[in-house]
Structures are given as C-alpha cells and as structure tokens.
Length: 249
Image (cartoon, rainbow, N blue to C red; front, side):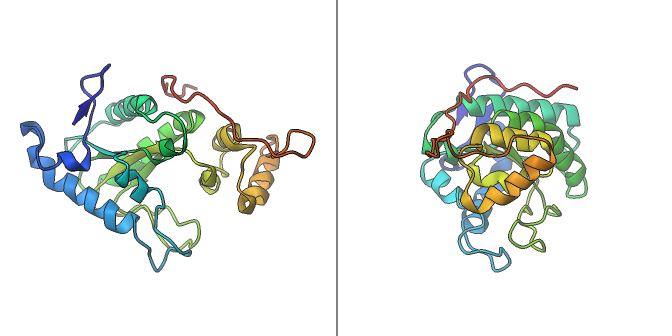
C-alpha cells in the first residue's frame, strides 16, 4: 500500500496488497478482490455485444501487468457529494504525480475509487453526478474520470445498445486521456477543446471527420496534423503534473 506523501488521507492499493490489508480495510478485502476480478475478466476480455474485436478496455491488461492499476476504498453508505468530489479531485492531483508521468506507460495508469457501502439504488445519483461535475476540470488537465455502477446507462461507442460501464460495485475510474477518447468528448465544447489541446495534431484517422465536424460546430479550431508545410508533427508534449483544481463558474 502506498500513501500520498503530501496528503496522508490518500492511499492506493495494488492488487498484490489485497491479501495483507491493514486492519481498518480488512472488511473491504472481498470488495477489492471482486473489483480486480471484474477488471481482469470483463475489462480485459472480449464481449459479444461490444461491436468490435478485442477487449472491452485495451488498456486494463497492460495496466495490471505493469503494476499501474490501483484501488482505493471510499467507505460509508451515505457519502456527501461535496466530500466525494473533493476526494476524487485530490486523487486526480496525486495521479498526475505518480510515476510514470510521461511516455507510453503513463497511459496505462489507473485509479479505481470503490464505494462498497453505497447501495445500488443510490449509486446513479452519487457516481453520475460527481463524474459529470468533475469532468470539465479533469479533461482540462488531460485526465478522464469514468462512472461505473450496476445500472449505468452510458451506451457503447461501437454498439449503442451495449452498456460497457456497468460494474458489480459502484466506482469512479481515473486515467489519462488518450487520443482515441474523442468519441467521449465531442458533445461538449469544453471537453472537445480540452481534447484538441492535447491531441489536436494527433487525432486518429478514423476520428478525423467527426472531430472536425464537432469542432466546427462549436466554433473551435479544427484538428490540424501538419505544421503548415504538409509535414506530420508529433503530439503535444504538455506537463500534466501541475495540481488539479476544480472548475469554478
């Protein structure tokens, strides 16, 4: 188990830690193991309804193999929105400090905030609300925050009838934004502007048309893969390690 060097209330569990939990977390061992099992089987495996070949999440297996897949427990049956939002924001800030901070392996980092005491009926109100509230601030810093629970109705990208974000227990997932995240970010000008800031020069070929269409609809500069002479340029190299602050209106 690792503890944040700047905030002792924050900690992360590696899957290898789950057989030797500290006393105050022992009662949540089965929940944490269930989350790892779900990630190892469901996220790492194919699904008939996914609409494409390959695993549900192509980043989870490398994350597990590289020791970059971490869990934390948020206890309590009645957590307050403001408290959960504050905790998720602090974990987002720590996430940016965790190594590796750059390079391909940084894309495999993931933190799952588990809510094992939260009743399934309350999960949509809490998890979906926190995710929606924090998404602008997270995407602005090159991060994604995902909502998972048993009744999540967010549709799949490749098959709109598939519900890929359903999980056996409520959780919020924090990870780096990647260039293939465009379909999750084209319906809001704030999200798309953040995506273009990070990946405007490196939008995948198959996503060029919808990203360009959305950018023009929002009055944003369309993605441009050249430097003006037709030469391909590298993706932006931007420091993602500065502290994450909630968006204010």
